[in-house]
Image (cartoon, rainbow, N blue to C red; front, side, top):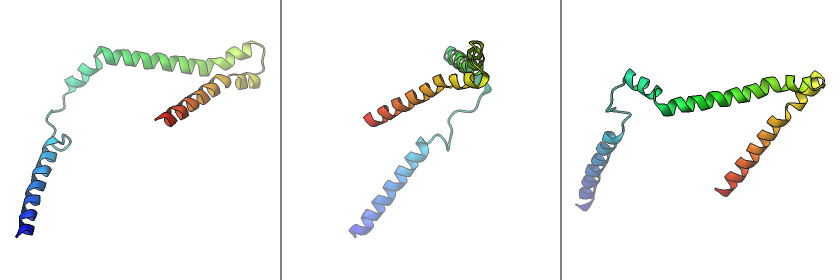
Length: 109
């Protein structure tokens, strides 16, 4: 008798839990409809504009350094091959600095 009662209670509890999970999961039944105006509103947000400007300036700096540093170094009197090798230094130092920082950060967590 108690086994059947426990089975019925667990089945009822399982149905309640599954109903709650289905209700709380937005991927199955989205409450909001898709709107193109929401996309335009988010693009015009000052936060998004500032972040886009920051990424643009970051890319400009990185690509400018990568593309023009060998020509700047070659203007100092070095050959093309030596200028290319000398311009690798900042990127190698940045890579190793980031790698050491990541390793130290990972060990402390």
